[in-house]
Image (cartoon, rainbow, N blue to C red):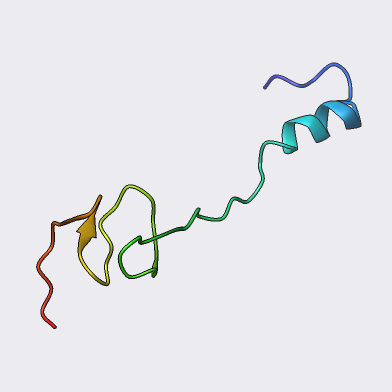
Length: 59
């Protein structure tokens, strides 16, 4: 099995670990009903996307 010849330095180790950050989902707001929604998706509350009704919801 291959074994590293030298110890990995702390800066090399930490720069590799810097890419493993937690990212929360971005949230945009519906222009019609102002409820939070994921970007580029139809609003789950009112069913609109880009000003058009794309999902008919029962009220």
